[in-house]
Length: 461
Image: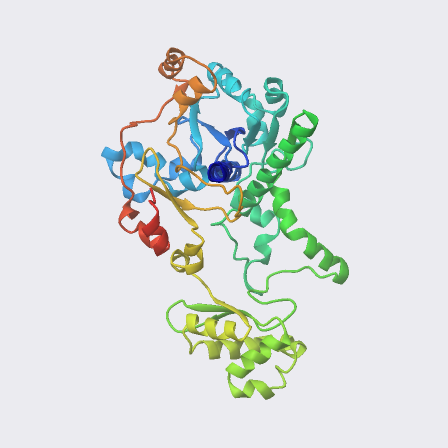
């Protein structure tokens, strides 16, 4: 009897471990590029069924990027919109439902799908959503208890000064003061146009808002409208400390390169080899004394460097001295030496360094999941680890329209004939060349991104 009970308990524990926090939650996503797609991907990681509603006639920007290795291959042209790394990076585990929402028939079908969903998630502009009938009031009319989360660039309030403006992630960096802080003193702002901080910041806010919205609905029985302005999520990253600094000192903080306002040395210094650097932060006197013990003997008695105040006053000379010293070391070796002495130091890692980073690999950051189009798709993981209800992804990003028939029949309740009629009428779309499955170029070396024991013990596919 005891053995049977233990076996039953073991099975129960195993089943429990397979449960994800958002199992059963359905999300209707109108997403483009990064902001709401990334939020939807995080929800899918925890078990939500996310329906990415899109159209090949007005595609998500990530469908237009493609990959260079497919760009001139006419035989594989159908795979090009699926080939950008962003497709899986932002849409893993979602189901693609392709509908032309500008058409009233398709829009009515979308409303029927929406009525089955718990969450509406979108990062299109507020005006654009209203024009196609997916503003909050229209959506609420179809699903009164909807958790409606939108991420327009400047919010959904028509009275707000920036409401009419068109927003794009990298363009907001100069608006909120990030670019003015980026670069070296006395030189023009460096800018960060290759990254879109508002997209990633607002996506995390949105995922949190979905969870709190669902909690409110469970408690009150009512839905909620959440307006996440990407502009404000980025302002919140910077404004607080610098506003306080200005209030206390009257100073307007601007570019200082890699230096600190409070201690020295703090910076990035050259090492042996081409474009090899080390970042060092001596945040207190103990760290500086450790550097003195390892560095040139003259540092110990140089009056310019004896206290932090003196080092800050002579920071130009200090940085020149530190750079001359670090230039004689391999950056990996010097970082290890400084770390052993308690100094905050690390190599300035390149993208290639991160690909082979032991910690990144051991934490199983890289995911290789099957997709309909590719044997396996590679994308990044999720940094939050939960012991009892771990999240996961079962597949990579979908092809446009890959799940149109499945979702409209199984979730909306339409017949096969009805769906076929929509496709024939050009208002719904299915996957282009669904039997075309090809290998990514990285198939031959994919194993190097995973720990040896992971490769040996589990099937990456």
